[in-house]
Image (cartoon, rainbow, N blue to C red; front, top):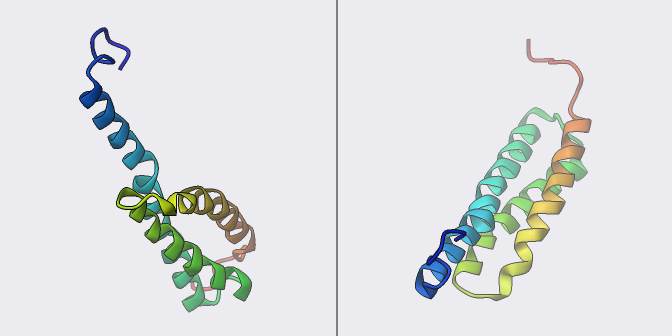
Length: 105
């Protein structure tokens, strides 16, 4: 949008805005929710993480997967930052709680 004449085309600017929001908002949180769900469910099968982390992982994953609804209705906008920031904290906590050795070798 920094090129001359692009910012005057309001239809193009609105389209670029929605494209950028789609990639940065739900386009980020939906795959991140799949990561959270995959890590928590896989770790629960191997009993690699404490119960309090395993329970919160699928809840965050569901929240992340529901964030795509922002593209349809405006109310779930709070799900995107909730997933992003709380999900990072969950991912860091899960990383610290993983066992130091690989017992499956």
